[in-house]
Length: 81
Image (cartoon, rainbow, N blue to C red; front, side, top):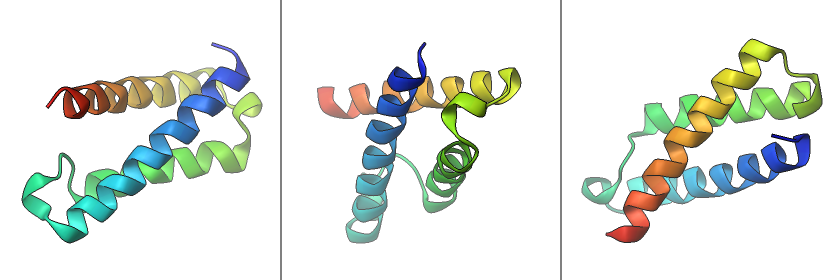
């Protein structure tokens, strides 16, 4: 995955997580993630942006991609419902 693709996925994931925060505040029973889970994922994204997507180590890159794939599955599950 190129740095541009990873950056695009980060932006989409960050947008989804911010929408989940709003959904959690408005009606917590409809939310997929709780505040702590959202916060952990957003912290990972912010750290990757701070470091720079191109400057991530192999371990951090794999960890970030795993989290992105996990959130993408949640996004698809929500859009189906």
